[in-house]
Length: 523
Image (cartoon, rainbow, N blue to C red; front, side, top):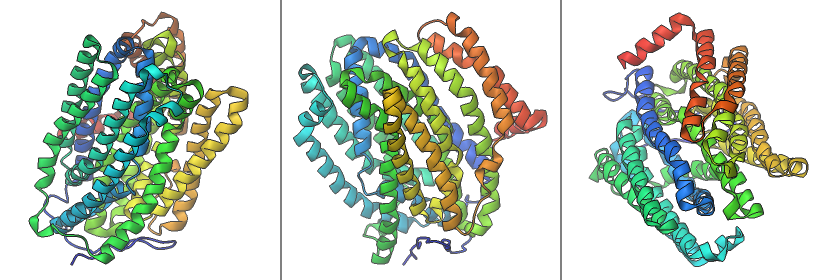
């Protein structure tokens, strides 16, 4: 019987059996990170470029009202995806540790057990939305003329969420084994399907019915690619439920992740949902699009999350927490420097570029995206540290951080609403992100005994300030001369290159740049 992984409490660390790593588990962290991040980035950038080119076309083709409804329903169903008891996110932590031991029986037993529970959760959520879809839509002040097609979209996306909760377990097994290219190919193929489907929807006037059908087909395509690969790392010998002590440990971890994940997604989607309620679903588009754009920029560095999770989990599973600390601290330094530069250049470029990209009716989108990206920086900068804490069993830290982030978000959103209206609500989101990160720093040092160096010590402060100032100056000077549409957005992005180069040279130096390029070339 496989030994359970006990959770960590205050002053405790997670003891991990010291076993020899399986073949391939000792692959260098740089190689794993570069390879995984490259595949993940490819799977984001291709869809990102498609979205940037197509969004003005889709807004025009569907109409601003239908597009706003689509964004709102997407946010609502994304919120529903968190109601799985934290099982999906927790399984990823266990899969990576099992991969470090090459333990296929434990992987299969956990996947089988969690799948049974998720099927029940998914069916319950879907049936609930089917029963109350019209009432949900009317809560967001939806015009009666849109309710039939919006109901079909809402029910379809809810069914997709239930399906994805199950499929993502197989994706987690694939990711834990460092097969990032498989997930990337599935994402790219699915998004190409999505693009073709939306073009056909616009050309044929199918409205939200076409959007619903397109998204169903998109998920079928992705499933065909990933699930067969995940099955290769399972075994028939594991087709039974996990033991009671393992289940107790897993559920103790999962419920904390559930609360933390729910608080996190509420924080991320709050601005779109509040706007939908206050100004109506049809007029909430600028806030939804601003949220989505900021999230897309956040996802660029987050392409490294799956490789980071796999690397930390496998390393801890192979050599233990104390043995893995030095390697993870090096990883943290690279991460902090990278995301600091990304946000320092990205915030001013976003403000100018998005305003040029979208129609005049979406002019607030640039403001919303830039403000939210400030908050995203604080959630990004401590990601390696948070992953370390989660791998060591500190789910309570994630849960408490997320609750504090949501509570302060709501508090400052209410306070800032009175002088600034809905834009004050958006600012409150970024304030909450900052305070949540501060609280994490305090709590993690109390809960986890094998501690990493504080991530804020790795931030290159003056280099980031200079890069942001250079980018802001160039962007504001060029703003009156930018073209409309995707060309204007692309131009604003290119104008961030001088600030980015200044940042890279001031943090890495010429020697560091040459070493980094050589590493990427080798890997």
